[in-house]
Structures are given as C-alpha cells and as structure tokens.
Image (cartoon, rainbow, N blue to C red):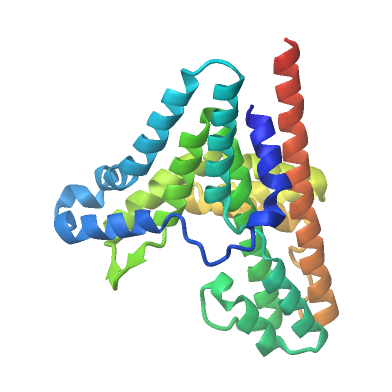
Length: 299
C-alpha cells in the first residue's frame, strides 16, 4: 500500500501544489508558542523533553488513527488506510517544488539582472545579498539540494519505514527548526534540542539522498566531497548531515572549485543541471523502493 500511496501523491501533485498559501502545520507553531508562554522558563523545556512535548499531540493523534485503521480488514478498510496515507503525505510534502521562483530567477539571469534574480530567491536564501552572483547561485543550489531531502525524500523514507506517523514526526521537527510565532523566539537551548532530534531523524535519509546524487552525477567527485564533509563536521551531526547533502550534490554536479565570473549563461545552466539531477534522484528513489516492494510481494 505504501508504494501505491506514494505514486498517487506524486502523480496528483499538479492538482494540489497550487495551494501555496495553505499552512497545514500552523497548528504546531501556534501550540509551541502557547507552550513557550507557559513553561518556556522551565529548564526542561529547553531540552529534548520540551521538543517531545511540542511534537506529542500531532504524532499521537496520527499514530492512534493509524493504529485503529490498521485493525480493519477487507477492501474498504484498505481503501480508508490508503486515503489517510495519501492525505498525510500531501499535507506534509506541501509545495516542494520551486518552479515559479527558479523560472523568474533564470529570466533575470537572461537579462543579466543579478539584483532582480536575488529578489526572486531571497526568501529561499534567508540572508542578505551574497557577495557576488556566483555565490548567490551556489547558495541557491545548496538550498535546492537540502530541500529535495527535507521536503520529499526524507518524508518518503519515514513513510516507507513506519507509515503516516513517521511522516508527521519528521515534518513537524522540520517545522520547529524555524519556529517564530507572535513575536516569540524560542530559546537557543530549545532550538538546539530541535536540531539534535532533527539530526538523528535525518541521518539515514540524508545519506540515501547523497548516494542518489553520486549515482546520477559524478560518483568519484561526489564521494570525495562527501568524505570531506564528514571530516570537517564530525562533531556536529546536524551540520554534518547538511554538508553531506551539499558536498555530494555539488561534487556530483562538478561545481566544486569552478572558476568565478563565468557569466549569467553558465549560472543558469548550473541551475538547470541541478534541477535535472534532483528530479532524477526522485526517480531513482522511487525505482529502488518499487523494486524492494515487488520483491517483498514475491517473497
């Protein structure tokens, strides 16, 4: 059923990806802000206990529904489980693609309008204008490589492993990384605990995604940059996961140590190549999962 649910979700993406203003996980941010106002001063809230308390309602509700539906028998019960799984996937994946932003970004590059290009992706970069157009292009590709894992492949991994409850757990922890609500900013201790939980959940999916990048692109360069990431960030699991994705992806694209000042055409081509590689990683992941599923059916 998991394979069918994934295929239905991705196959109908054009029907629901236009709902860009919908924020289905807003309840999590509201609830976490409410908790912060009441128990934020407690030391335990700035640790894993506070993170687990924030995650508990959504995870428990979805887990309970999943458990109840699993007890049903027959085709109708199977159909309900499938509908529930698809609904959770759609809500959790949300708008993963960046087609509108990247299209406008490329159009600006065609006009050599680097300032205009930055305006189209500044929310993605989440920082001030980069020092140079080449740096802006590189940072955008890094965002694309990480987003492919966090907004799709890691979600599919946890769905394949434990079902809808895994999807909600992973997506919720991703949402908590940047929680700001009503002017309230969580303490560094709380956000640090969020990053630690996220790092644990993301360790395997990030490496599966990195392997896909290596298989599709330049395998040797991807592996070289992967090893460099592990050595550089050995003591920081969260940053290490992100650097594994970035280094392997940039290595696969052969964009490490490239010359600067190559011009807008080269920058645009790099974005197109990155988009193509990201799309192929999804195909590779789905193919591998389909083969494993079919092997399970035949065994």
